[in-house]
Length: 69
Image (cartoon, rainbow, N blue to C red; front, side, top):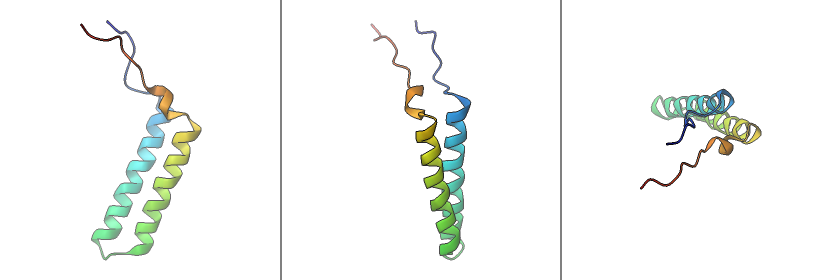
């Protein structure tokens, strides 16, 4: 049995939280108007979150378990 965790590092979760907030802000911008400035802020947050995700090397959080029998 694998002893690794699939939870990820806190840095990776910060990147995910930034991206999530960007989606929320962008969605609110579409629903309330559409208000393209608010939507643009959301899109910018998503881009910033993506850059943060690349900077913290989020893809190394993946843990490959042994094949199950």
